[in-house]
Structure formats: C-alpha cells, structure tokens
Length: 121
Length: 107
Image 1 (cartoon, helix red, strand yellow):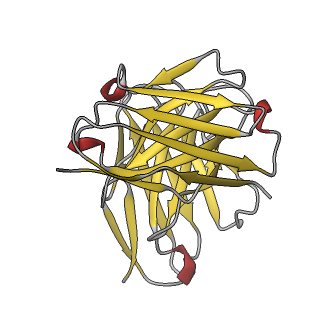
Image 2 (image 1 turned 90 degrees about the vertical axis):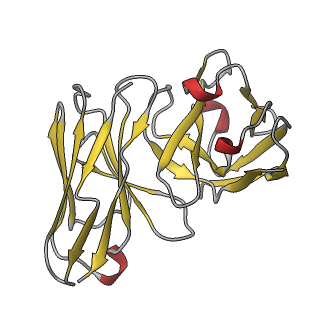
Image 3 (image 1 turned 60 degrees about the vertical axis):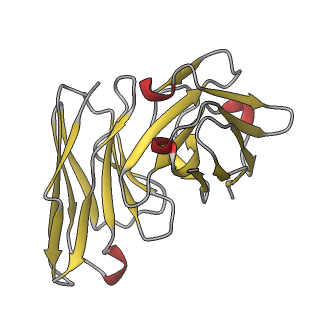
C-alpha cells in the first residue's frame, strides 16, 4: 500500500521559511516523479512543483519560482519542499502527490494527507 | 497557462439520479486529462485519467469522456458516498492546472 506522509507545516511569519518533508513507502520511490500540490482554505487545487525521478529536472508554478525549491533523497524515500520568503497567499494545505507514470507531467494517483502552512504575523 | 473551467459550480442531485459534470480547457490538452473526487478533510482521489480510463478501484458508475477542450464526467446513479467536490486537471502542458471544482450536493 502506497503511503505518503507529509510533515513540517506550521505557523510562520511573512518573509519566513519552512521546509516540508514527505516520507514515501509502499512503492519504488526512485522510479516515480513527484509533485507538491496546495489548497488554500476553502479553495481549489493548485499544482506547485514537480521533480523527476533523479531530481535533475524540476518545474514550478510562476508564483513560487525563485522562492521554493523542490528536492528529493531517493536513499531515504523522501520528498522535500524548501519554502522561503513566504507570503500570506502561500497559506494552504500542502499535499505530496505521486505521479501516475514514472515520467514528469502527469496526474496523481496517490496523495498524502496534507500539511497545513499558515503565513501570518 | 491553460485555464480549466468547470461547470456548474454546484450540482444538486437526488440519490440514484445521473450527474453530468463538465470541464473546458482554454486550449487543447489532447487526452491528457484527469478527474478527482475530494471529500471534506480528505486528500483528492484520482477517478479518471487519460480522459476516460478509470483509476484502480473506481466503480463503473463513474465514466469520463471527451478530448481536446471539452470533457465530461458522468456518475450514472449517485450513491451517498459520491456527494463531494470534483476537480478536473490537465497534464498536457506546464504548468499543470486544475479546474475550480464542482460541488455535487444532495437535492
């Protein structure tokens, strides 16, 4: 059974930083591209960032480019999202999501339970 | 960026009735298109990918259709567990984008 467990969310002041982690199990983590998707309170889904199996290729939505960095440690089956210069509009539940296929640019067949990031003074 | 527009925003349906949800893409996404279901407090669940292929474990009452810019999700006979919010997603172009959602509520 695929399991994705996010951690690292919390309350942070505007301009601050957080590092989210996603521990994966139940599948060959190094064989699948991964993404982060967020959902602001009461709103829809927004894809944030994606990373290839090796970590060599990454994509970001425009609003987080230059502020967020996605990475992965295949030896530890863990996905990360380093979030800097946080803004109020980054407040959301952040989901770790597994790509349906091994290559990037897919839909997502498994999701974590999400971790809430609140940016507020 | 490809904009995904879902309609209606809310759909009121009685249990056992048929529900049809729509999603329109601002440009062609071919068949690189998915539907998700989300219940309150839960993560989204993949229902349909490739516009018409049911994901693992999804009941046969869910069906997807369409290609290019126009897509539909049909739930043939609504069960109590189907009342939820449904999102569409395109994965033909970066950035990946989702629709705003359709809430299916009990009539």
